[in-house]
Amino acid sequence: MDTLYDLVRRTVNAYIVPHSAFLKSTWVGLGVVAFGILSSGLLHANYGRHFNPNSIFPTVNGKLGWISMEIVSPITVVVLYQTFKSPGPSSSTGLFLLALWLVHYSNRACFSVLLSPGMKKSRLDTVLESMVFNLINAGWVGYDLAHLSTEPFVLTPRMLLGFVMFGAGMVINISSDYHLQGIRREKGDGNRYVLPEWGLYKYILSPNYAGETLEWIGYAVMLRQESGWVFVLWTICNLGPRARTNLAWYMEKFGDKVGNRKSMIPWII
Image (cartoon, rainbow, N blue to C red; front, side, top):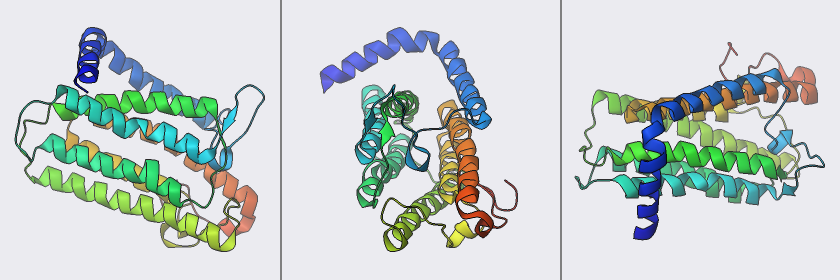
């Protein structure tokens, strides 16, 4: 592993750190562009209910594709953290936030997939794009976490606020996902979607996205670094348009049964 850490350290210091300002600006710009493209309706992320095969890109098994693209994030954040961390207290801010990241992605990359009753196929280009995003995003966060490895963890009001937001977002995200999976098992055939009527689904049709957004806002509050807030930007730019597309999909499929429900924020949008 030392060889890997040394390679990562030399690569980051030689090719990324000297151009960090330009790379950060480019990454933020790409997030805004992605929001514009996804909001236009011309393109959708081709997985789940919006999967759309074509003759150019091959498809992969839904569960295999999801695990492949999401597992990149926890692996990358650990490698960057281990590469750049400095000796510090056993209970550091960096280690605490690393643990929260791994808890989130343990569910996202493994448990939620294994417990899912069925996942539609994904296009290979979508999987590869997601892998690249997770590599860059987790790499930046892992680098910043490493520089917090010398900071003792203290439960300040700011950390408490961020942790409460993160925890609440995670509960909303996970419970919404698992409820949807549960009713698909009971009322569908594992692959057929049904209209959920539980919890926040009574008010919005993408509470899992709302919860995930709240999660990463809380994480950014605790992290106190650009990487955290840029991740929030990317989360909003990706999930916001997709939540709106989900709402349109539900309205087309279930009609008046959707009622006055919104996409992500009750009574607003």
